[in-house]
Length: 623
Ligand code: PTT
Ligand code: SF4
Image (cartoon, rainbow, N blue to C red):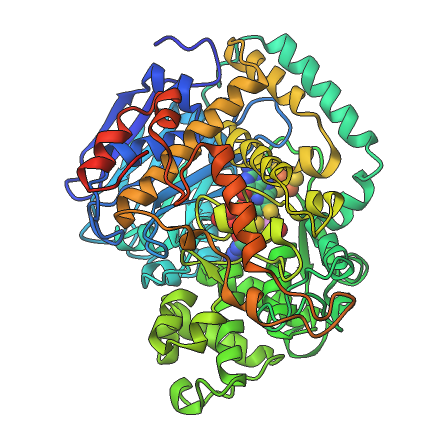
């Protein structure tokens, strides 16, 4: 198909086993019905992955996908999706990273890369317009992700786009992620380990070709309007000073700041690790992704004590999970841990969760020094946390078990350990406590990759609607949010923060999409694409799991069983009957049955008829 703009029209296929590289035309239907990013990823994985393959085997595929708007004059359009069958969850997994590689890949002439097979020796993929090569990565293997990025830039110059793994990915740690540009991370559900199994240390893209745009005058006009709007936003100044870090104070106020492995929603030392303290005492540099007029990267330097001199780029999730969630109230220590997570290529959220979980097991006497190799896993000790991070990344001693993620650790100990393991479908929960937030718990429960706030940071909308409200409207609002965040932003692929934080209207994105592509899509059309993607991702999980039960969409037992003991909401916990009610409203609105399986009519009305025989073939009963 001739695309008027946005899409380049080509997918790069790389087989690491044979070393064969080929180009494939981008299918028109794929572009029009799945748009890009996550949409491309799920359709390719659904079509091409045989059921039941081991995610850490040559049969798994890695999809690196941009969208039509990526790298164009749309604010904050420097994002790219990394997706695969997840070794952590066994289901669909993806992450979205802000990195120059997003635009650079398109400037090399490709919308996406599909990586198959596994290389016999460490390699990296080097792409420019006219060159696609697998190059020896022997000198990088074993190096930290940040050090490897420096080494690659010494060879190829500063303007390259990179995706890199650290030792954690190389060692097949299931909570490993992919790193770029010294402080960007994406691919929480073990995407680092998928790179590692394939012996793919990095992808480097250095393109210079134009990205076609259907109506450049219109797009430029829209860009000017958007930048003007964002800069005039009353929230702009605070945002560029603190970015997501302002959420520490907000979460404390709302009693959703995770503390002590999600036992509490408030933390006494919150201000020491908060956005205000960071801005006044630690931040040394503001940095941003491509074409971002509201840069939120908080590069910080540790000032005091033994961690002084360490640096790291701080975001709310990292600080909450490696701070309050493990009882640490030192910003200096959190900066150090953040650096270590990036260097080792560990996902900071899952790392904070697995360490908090180990500390919780220790505090409840489920494990002791006998299990940990002598380490006393007391909350609040950053040295212990840093030791554990190394042990996890290199799979040493007790770290080898933690490297498997919270779910598998819990399965080893059983009983109470299963109740206090904070994950959904195997993905560790990101940083919002839900003892008194059933709607946010539902957002985690129904997120298409396991417990992550990416698809629905529903907590803010929920507080406006009322924490205790259990209604169909709440489930409908959640789905609306999933359509926007998990659909529009993950397919376009652009950063959602201008919309959610500074209020850039959705209508703007619809107009920008049309100016870039020359199409005439409405918001409803994009919602339909988003729903199609949700149904297909759900079908992927069902196919892998061999069926479905509503319990797979439940949040952890801890939130139902152990009430909060501190703060204004002390005594509160989730109620299972009420959660079930919300979940049923959710299923009904989505057109899924009472077990969470999409109905035949639903699949047909989204053009997903081909899913029906695939699921029936494995004995799934569709209504
Ligand atoms: C994302 C997850 C997040 S979400 C954070 S902080 W956040 C953590 N960051 C990590 C990190 O850093 N180092 C590390 N070793 N591990 C980390 N794990 C955690 O990873 C991110 C911003 C942020 S900061 C958010 S919310 C938004 N996410 C977006 C998204 O998902 N989609 C989209 N279209 N736009 C988004 N904009 C924002 O981007 P995962 P980034 Mg990331 C150091 O991908 O797997 O979803 O993990 O992308 O480039 O780092 O920017 O309070
Ligand atoms: Fe990147 Fe932050 Fe800008 Fe989003 S708002 S594009 S995460 S710098």
